[in-house]
Image 1 (cartoon, rainbow, N blue to C red):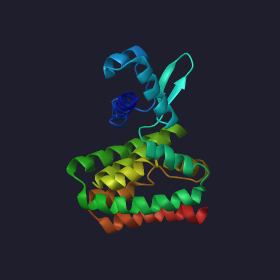
Image 2: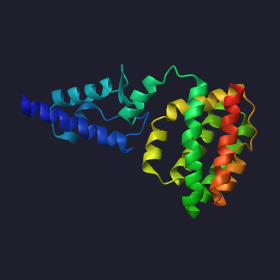
Image 3: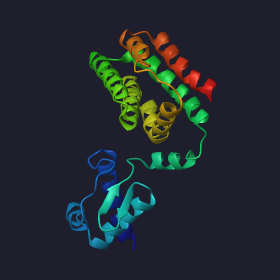
Image 4: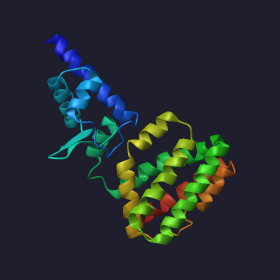
Length: 217
C-alpha cells in the first residue's frame, strides 16, 4: 500500500510538472491513458488515480467522449479563483492597483531593451484590438500588456501573485471595457514612462487610471 501510494504521488507530480511548465498548456488535451502509462512507466490504475487527483485539484477536467483537458496551471490559482469568485469589481481593482503600481515602478527601473521593445509591441497590439471593436481581443491584448509590465518588473514573487489572479483580472478588464470608455491610447503614457525609465511617473500613471475606476465604481 505504501509503495502504491508513492507511485501515485510520483505520477501526480510528473503530471503536475508538465502542466506547470507549460508543456501541456491551459486548454490543451493531455495524452490519452495508454500514452500516459507509457510516459510515466506505471500501471493504468495508477494513471487513473493520478489524473483524478488533479481533476479534484482543479487542474484537469474530464470531458465525456473528448478526453481530459488542462483547466489551470496552478493549484493556487484555482484556490484563489474560488475564494474571489464573488468579489466586487471595486475590490479587484483595489488589489490590481497595489500590484500594478509596484510592477510599473519596478519595470521602469529594471526593464531591458528587449522588455521595452515588447511593451511597445503590446501597446500597438492593444490599439489595433481597440480599433477592431472585438471585445475578447481587446481584453486579451490589454491583459497581455499588463502581464508584460509585470514580467519586466523582474520580481518572481510579484509575477507569481499576478499570474495567479489572471482570471479575476481578465474579468475585471472585460467589465471595465463594457462599463467604461477606454481610449485606444489609454496606456500609452504608462508604457512611455516605463520605456523612459521613470518609475515615479510610471507608478502615477498606473494609479491614475485605476483610481479613476475606483471613483467610478
